[in-house]
Image 1 (tube, rainbow, N blue to C red):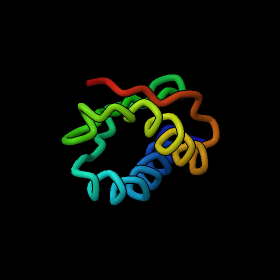
Image 2 (cartoon, one colour; image 1 turned 180 degrees about the vertical axis):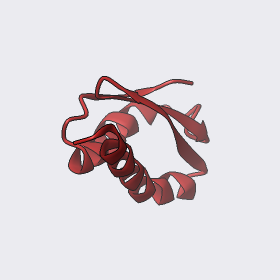
Image 3 (cartoon, one colour; image 1 turned 135 degrees about the vertical axis):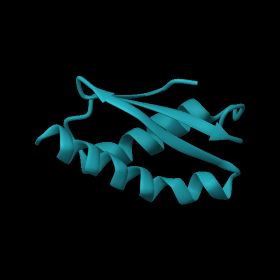
Image 4 (cartoon, one colour; image 1 turned 90 degrees about the vertical axis):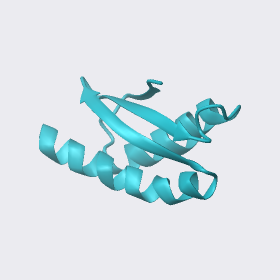
Length: 78
């Protein structure tokens, strides 16, 4: 998979996740993809949310891997 295809698939995954985050007063922004590691920034209510690490790993990372299985990890930079 090319870098462009990976980016497109990660964006698709984030579009699937975004409505759930927005409904809770948050959002997510893609910062970069380097060496199969996706860097995102959780926004709004997601910043101080005590379950954001669980959301990131179980929700965001799992959904991104569904679209781009080569992704090894999703990291919140924020």
